[in-house]
Length: 618
View 1 (cartoon, rainbow, N blue to C red):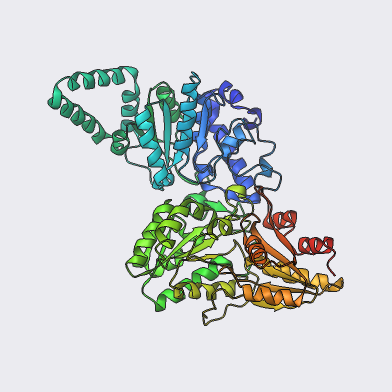
View 2: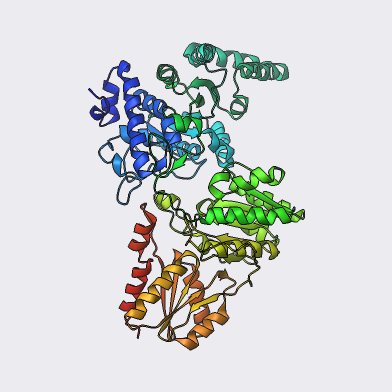
């Protein structure tokens, strides 16, 4: 008889015998693996955290006790244990469960996540709110080791160490190796140091030594440092946390014992656990990077299914960058813990001395690039669009204010699909367009992308190149890279009834829409604008002479986006032309397949046609 179907809430979990927990963990892994193979998702981290999440819900009284996940890509077992089993097959599908914790989805999701290094800050806020309301529940932050490469985590830790409130931070270290300290000695020392008697004795000894002026204070510090020799948590201890571990995070008995012991420890506490990413599924254990985030795949082999043979925008960028860097030794590439996702892995293999992975530290990446540019090299920073939001001030203050020639390659711009609102790159045009000195371009296809990359390095100015996730349009990549004129668009076709001004990956849907409109008797032109900034006002004026109606199409928010730039220009010249702006309204876009979401937003070819027909253009 299976255990998992009987667990509808963590309360049910806490009623079962401990002997059944290993079986439950096997069933959780099987469910996660089966669903991820069909829906895609974050597999490796979720498989590795099964025992840890099970132990947390078994020991703590959730949802009264609150668990905050960092990033949240490891939370699939959490969803299965908190009343979402029946809907789990819908995860990442349109209208189904989110791939990340989401407050409106469940009372067990204490804080919404999706970006890294936020958990300690959020958990500290929840803990202080608890204190102010005179409540006494527990707050736990579950943080992956990668998230500690982000500076925000350390800002939160120093604040928590200062405030001294009760907070448990679990550092889930999912490196491929198991630390030598994970074993009988580590468990024994952690258990010993967590007991109330040892804590009380340590506090009494410290207070006693502090009575003896400088000598006593120095002795207290020395004792604290001596304790840290046995434990690799010196940094955390210095920031005001009590450090325990490391503990094998895939050993249920060890976890239950330690969590029960630490549950009543006062003040900020860090428990260091070591888990195996992809645990229980051999292909993921052997290749954790590949199985961190997956599309649909064959469970038996681990091979991906349903992949397009068309080269992706990311691949086109990668090939072009390597080609350019082969000829120009001053080109240097930076990423924030996403070499494979951004396509910089190929650059890393060929030019390791010119490649820098700064960890989950986008702010540092931007200012580091500014320093490189000030030093005379040509840096490119490759990020996902959604993560570029984290370094807005550095782009404005450190790069554009000084007019430094840093190139940003913003992958995953526009709608990204199943990862949902935390990852859609639909804000970059809006928050970047107002910055002086900045050039902002968006290619229509993978061939134009490589030419714009060459253009970016030759511009000698801050340059943003934004492009979408996934396969290109299937156009042939030209061998010779060309420099395109900055701020100049390109006529795809001309029409006398209306002109669509399209940017980025909405150019080809606009072309398809124009062809469909032609069959309905509407002659519609299409311009590939290429640049949001500087805006090609000359081509807009040409469009005004050709036809009485203009339509802008973009995969960005309407507020402050490309259409807004066109509207501002038309307003300034007091044009009376009818302007229709197509883009994303003032709301967050939920998760689903990219094609489904563009259809829902009215930004596919048929949506463009319908909007133009509704305007009675003819």
